[in-house]
Length: 188
Image 1 (spheres, rainbow, N blue to C red):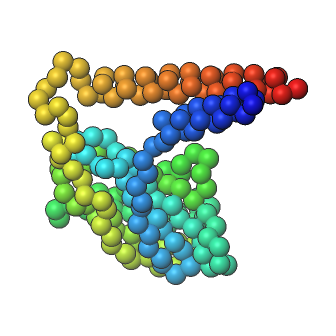
Image 2: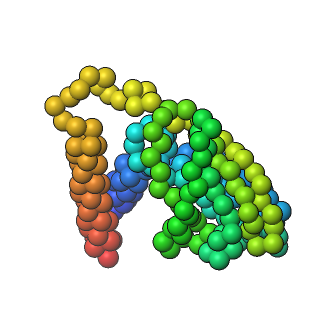
Image 3: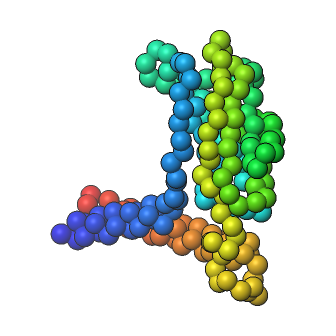
């Protein structure tokens, strides 16, 4: 009976640790060009004007059914431009370390509004000429809290909250491991 209670407590603690470490992931959009699928979006969502961000794309070859991430050399002839208000900026896509088919480019969206991506060039032997909209860049005021200036900078507050959550998650994880070990020891 005690073993079942300890196991249940260990499972509950593990579940709490997983919930506390959950990060919100927004859906990216997808376009299909020939035998290729391009998934695109902002690196950090929601995008906030004046905050460093990036555009990320994932390219898969879908010609044989199931999508397979493409090799870096396939994307070298793809041109990606960021567009806003009549201006354009050609992005330099860098491969994302340890993620096949993933590429990103750092950008600082300076003004709130709708930005677009223009894909041109080729993927393998497939010509690409597509323009798509990204998620709307928000003004800082739309997410800022409290609305007035505070004694702590937003960066310090965010870092403090993140540090607190990391330490709490670590503590709960260690507690769960300890309870699980105790339950195993008592069941023998």
